[in-house]
Amino acid sequence: MKIKKGNEYLALPMKPTPRKLEIITTASTLFKEKGYSAVTMRDIAKAMGIKAASLYNHIKNKEEILTFIIISLAEQFIEGLEDIKNSNTTCIEKLKKIIELHVGITSRNTNGMASLNNDWMHLKDQLNYYLKLRIDYENSFRKIIKEGVKKGEIKNINPDIMLFSILSTLRSLYIWIPQKEDLDTSVLASNLSEVLLKGINK
Amino acid sequence: MKIKKGNEYLALPMKPTPRKLEIITTASTLFKEKGYSAVTMRDIAKAMGIKAASLYNHIKNKEEILTFIIISLAEQFIEGLEDIKNSNTTCIEKLKKIIELHVGITSRNTNGMASLNNDWMHLKDQLNYYLKLRIDYENSFRKIIKEGVKKGEIKNINPDIMLFSILSTLRSLYIWIPQKEDLDTSVLASNLSEVLLKGINK
DNA sequence: GTCTATAACGCGATAGAC
DNA sequence: GTCTATCGCGTTATAGAC
Image (cartoon, rainbow over all chains, first blue to last red; front, side):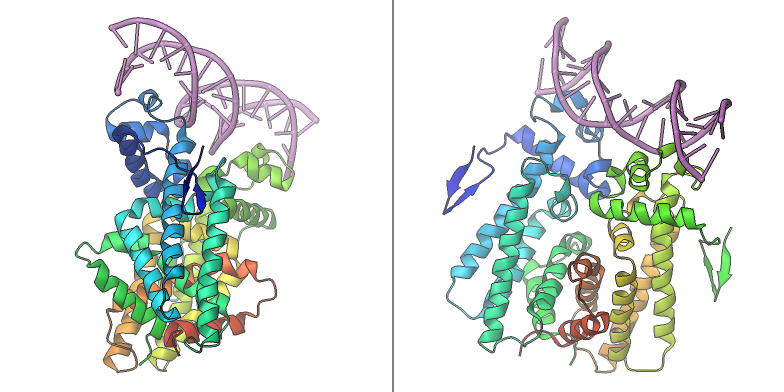
């Protein structure tokens, strides 16, 4: 059962109940600390002050928790990039918008981003859908870089290396953002743009 | 039982037997695919064509495999950085050497680097030792950047953001290197230096 | 909606034969 | 050095009382 949004069929039709969302956010925290496979249903229940069996009144199984965390984030990235692709601006400006997109989504859900990065291989039903979203995202990102090279905005280096370098940094944001409590996300985004686009060498 | 090497006590005194090394490399491959917690002793044994019980003639337990993978890599980084710190050259040149260090170690053991990045929290005996090595490494790295800023070689941006950005890219190399079969590591290192130090913007 | 009890199974690790 | 057999425990998930 999927709903249509824009031109894409998305995988998460229902808004979860408050209690279900509580399970998902609790699980996210534990998944970030130890990884999906090392976290048990008893761990999640204990963190909520209930018994493991009670979780099953709200969720189908453990996999459903992981699926929700990962797919909802992946869809946010796809939708955000869609807007950027369609915006009428330079490629460098588009890259700045992508950096802002990552800082924004990550700062709102650092725990979930850990699962997106490290636990996607434990998806079952929605693994292929996730892989499709990820490939689509990287292809659109690479296309923007290549267009920037063509237009002379961006250096003529191997686009895959530039894509890899920027994306690696953006995907690691979930580790760094929570460490800096007093962080202004717009300052972070602009500093990151400076470093990623213009380098650190004076 | 630790041996002395240089001025540091290292945690891996014995060179493993060939059979033990075979277990470790087999396990590394599986750990990279699914993560440490999701890989069973039966999985490792099956991949080697033996039974799980037979593994225990060569290793003490599952944790010992992970410990060897992670600590031996962490010590390679510490030793490599020690040489770079002591070299008589500019800070920018030192950063280039660090990039070469990461490309070199990672290309020789992409599987192990996955565990170093993602499974260190499952260490027990050697967890504190690993954390000390990691903090030492990041501090030395940060010191080089700060010195570069002071000497006017490097831009006066938040050093933590520069450290984070470069290190995130270098730590993700294990994902990208195996995908590019025909990759020349020295070309990769020099392209990465260009992108990480001077940026992509023309 | 949470509980207790339990089913059904897989886990790491050991003992002892060969 | 590898095997079979097994122990003790932890795992996800379900059934049914309250």
